[in-house]
Picture 1 (cartoon, one colour):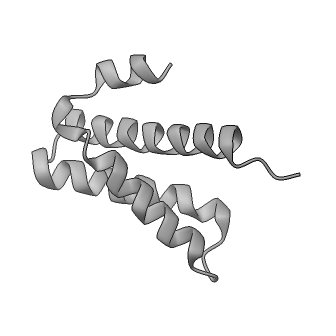
Picture 2: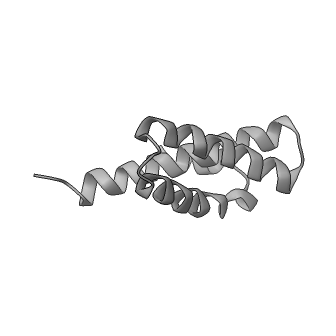
Length: 86
């Protein structure tokens, strides 16, 4: 599934995913930001970053959404595979 998402996103957007990981980590460590709100923050950052860098058009916005999806999906894969709580 991750490979299919990567195939529809332009390679220029790949560096946005680690940036979103960092922003999500910072939000998670901030005590007054609820967990449910983090994905919305990431969505705003992803769309704004991609549109600011690659132009304000629909394709850039869609790639920003896909970058957020890949970021959240990959974080969940790591978290649920290697960071299991007992």
